[in-house]
Each structure stands twice: as structure tokens, then as C-alpha cells.
Image (cartoon, rainbow, N blue to C red; front, side, top):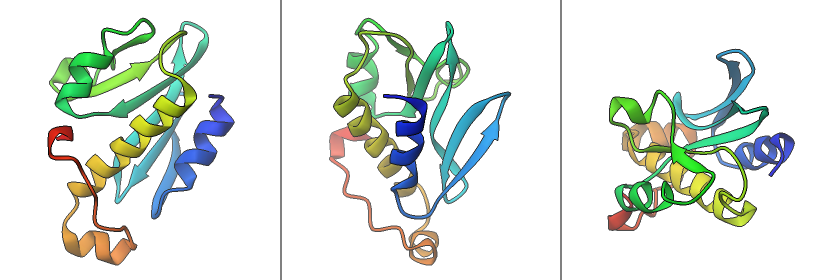
Length: 127
């Protein structure tokens, strides 16, 4: 996935906002909460996303995926796809979608309604 493809995909979710932070990172938020980041790692785009507990344990074992610098070291379940082979584009999109759902599930029902964000449909094991 390219940075442009990442930005277009993140922009497809309801009620998102995009900012450039931390140097040159594309940061995507829903309801003011970060759900995806694209920055640089080892000279390549690196994609960072929130994940559930099981995915956090399983996916970090794959070459090219690691606990997200800074976020995971603070006990948060965030991963970073930082080099090949990592995740396929389809897998990365699935994880970004899950990240969006996890983040928006943490918003109040009132806030979701105000922003037009649909009720999250989460698998109970994804939290």
C-alpha cells in the first residue's frame, strides 16, 4: 500500500479528520481519537494501527510487523507494518478497518450519533 492509497482508504470512513503530525506523519482520527498513522521507518512508509489483544499477539510474530514504537511501549495494543513481507494490502485494510471500529466503539453513543458514525460491529474477541 502506498501512502496515497492509505490516505484515500482512511478518508473513506465516516467522520474522519487528517492532520500531519510528528514531522511528516499522516495521522487519521475519528472523533478526535487516532485510529491510523503513516510515517517513516527504515526509509519506507510504515503503517500503524490499533488492534485487539489476539491480533496483537499473533500479528507481531510476522516478519515486517512489530509492536508500534512509543504506543506499544506504553501498554497500548498498537502494531506497525514497517517492511515487507508484513501484511498484504487486503490484510492491512482489514486491520485499519478494525482499528477504526475499536476507536469509534470507545466514543460515547451521543458522540457517534453527532458525527454520523454507525454503531461499531465488533467481534467480542477483537477488544
